[in-house]
Image 1 (cartoon, each protein chain N blue to C red):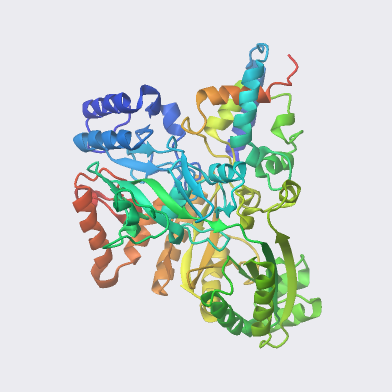
Image 2: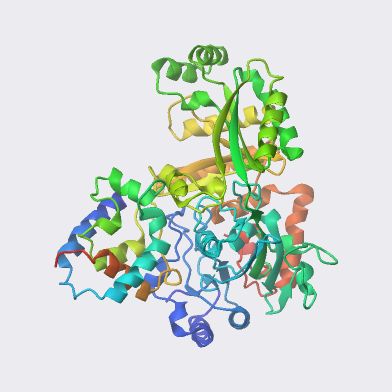
Length: 526
Length: 114
């Protein structure tokens, strides 16, 4: 039997026996066969030295069982690693950061406690998936949308805590959180916001309650176990339409992004969009390939003009009353018309609700609040798994161009052909900034994954040197990224550690999560 | 894709070693159908945007939709679910219990010729 670091075999055996008494023997897992199902299927450390392997898993069903499990973990100093649905693939899946941790698997806590389509919220447990919540809403014909990420098998609780994103106007998942229930390491149950008021009627309707707003502390952290979460939902919109803005010249990027930033900040554009280089997706052509390789901006512009392909494009999705969204698109077109040679293209449009037949024809239903796994059609083709590098960069044309240069170099290091246009990654927006999503393939090849990790670590440093930081990462790189948020001699990390020590003195909750180690492990961090 | 080859070898071995089937139990098949719809259909179903089906089709597996197969065996299904293959991850017992997995196997082997 594996044991957690620093825990004797006899203590671990005693803890396991006590876990079994709390949750039932069938919900404690220690066999190699069961432990294998908790390994990260997409680990960048796949079968390599340092791949974190849990020493077991325990799956409570309810707050009282969690309290008892935490009591046992405190007694024997067992590090636990909390997962909700355990499908956070690309970020660690259901595997811990610290090898030998016991996975606290909350999948059995899978109850949708409430969905309200008059005030537009849900209250859910961590084991509920986006698919589950969608099904619950459809079966009751409630007039609200969820906002699933790609893909939909994850947990609304887990994804919101990880500050994931979706594609509808409710796309900032942590921003949509309204009220939590948290079990602290000492077993105390806390309700945040209005939930602290016994008999509160507005737990899921007003976020802040009274006094310090502590919800953020439980996101991307290891300060507690979140057992319930309120999430704001989108009232089913009347209609959707999308339009694409295309500009012909390389230097048009700056004015295009400046206009876009205004549309985002003013609320005219509320949902996910993407800046793209259509020249990157143009049909294969030796002339274009040569131009890409040469990096000739003038040559690419002339090619685009001849073939009617834009240098840059940006797609704008609109959700709401049909008259309003038509007016928003017209307004946006008016703004972008300041750029000489701009072209516009109307895209998909829908009225809701969609019929079952309409849904069945949509390859990518995620923008319509329908969970899916279709993303794997794109990213699963040539790899076993994926790893996302996702720095937040300013919403300016200059920053996009600078980032493009950095990523071009990475692309070449990965040994792929093509020039600047071909390597252009996806730019989404988050808050009032862009987030680049650059996907690396994870393969069952130790050497290739080592190379990917080396490039990833170099990118973290190069990004930090330019003032860019990542919004989220795989467990493998959490320490590296936390170290770049180092203003004033790592003052923020010190604050996190102070909170960690106060709330979890034995360091039982998710050691190492987002760079936060408990006191006893700080010198031996992974 | 060493792992994929290993799985194909495993697949052949398991297929040959599969024991004779007991008569299918209708309630078990119904349960399996429900579990399949929840856990497998989003990737292996029919229609657009089903990456598991697309991947099997791209690898020449016919039919690519698992529900239409008549050559799957219970041990093989269990290996794929618990060990994963290619971009299909492992599924834990807290997601798909052993009993649910038995039911999926009953459903996916319902049309096998015995």
